[in-house]
Image (cartoon, rainbow, N blue to C red):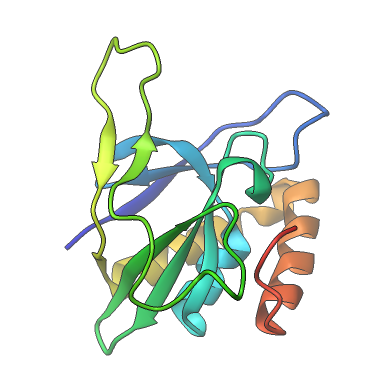
Length: 161
């Protein structure tokens, strides 16, 4: 089984969209932050969900969408789609084959590449997402964005322009 986790990292620039939850997969720090509303939908409704956003917080910059399945005891990320995905291009069974969650542009260290599918224990996944949501009252901008995005995602509008 794979594992999701996070660490709190505050982005200092006012030019950034709010994001505070640095994404870790299998205890490896990624270049991305979690789209918390996307994670919530991935565990409750499934389907194509925005999961990773770049440090600027904008999905349209370098984010990834994930096709999520909810099984009896696990959550499966079966496909990844790059930031430019939409209803027309995010097709089940298609997507990125090698997903660079840590890209080393300088060549000074290892890259972190995942190959879907990723499988997560449902109870652990739920626990981590619920823990992040419980911390939202401490981050007003993130909380507001979460509420707005969650409303949009639940209504079926999951793609960012």
